[in-house]
Image (cartoon, rainbow, N blue to C red; front, side):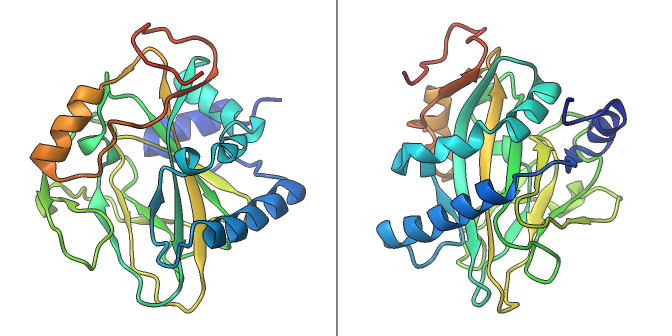
Length: 254
């Protein structure tokens, strides 16, 4: 049985985000929690609000990005030719946390055509109290990348902040997830998160998926570092995890 039914796919097209009914099983979740604890120790990571490039740090993380529960749902949304091009941990400790400002991912992602989705996997219980993901439902529909301001404040994780006039009229929605559950959201969806000062850790991980008909433009990524001051994505590994590279222009990691 496919993970998403027609009604859920229609809801994703309408809202820009979906929380599939099926998450990771208890054994997979237990392995994931243990792996996170060991990874933080091995990498000597103490401030783990945001840890990018975890596949580059440890290729075995890829195991979770290709789990059928996740990959089958992604395939229903972007097709059967799929590249994982990004991965990260979000591990807000529960005090002294930083906010993730309202933004659109695609504003600084070097993918052309810009078609990609993110799977956000909860490792801990993730809710409004400990600063779950917040989204503006439907803000993806116009397929427009809105203007952002640059803010290099230490109070936020990302330096790209959506201009306030572009926030949609729809009220924000909290995306609360039990451990092992995940959400998938569209590249144009406006989203962010409050700082976590609840005293409770909020750990999750993300994988970024693009259809293999798109191209990951490394030259564009390098220019964006110079022009926008964003994280350098130009050396990201590309993993073809299903199908073929339809574009024929992506340097897939073998």
